[in-house]
Amino acid sequence: MSEIKDFTETESWVVSNTLKERWGGQEIELQPADVEIRMMPHDRELTTCPALFWQVGDTSFIIVKTGERAYRSQFYYKGFQQYGTGKSEFDDIADCVTTLLQVHADKEAERQRELENN
Image (cartoon, rainbow, N blue to C red; front, side, top):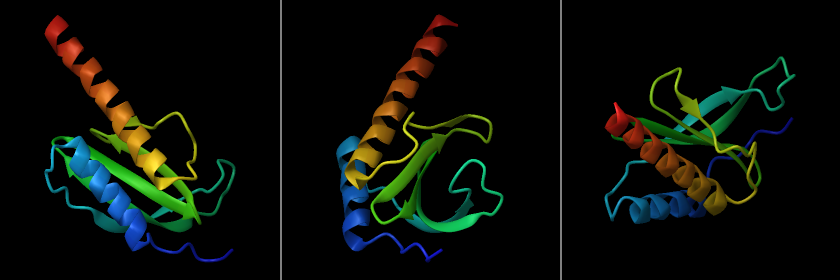
């Protein structure tokens, strides 16, 4: 299997600008990382993939590049509070980050309602 290339400048720019739009111009630091994942659920071997990681408040976010124009994403509050988008893989980085942020906003609204009801 060929090595998965790092995020391009354009891909990183798309993520960075989408985050600025979401958080009112606030500069969010993107941290490049490498992660090991199973490409398919039944795989025994792990594949090293490039990732972009960032944190806002108590939420951590990650987008993993699994191939040319192939991305996975999730956010989490604690190790056991992990959330995906409901879509296993995206072929467009803008769609990936936008969907991730929409799901996060929905979860934040749900958490706020739970706090208000308790």
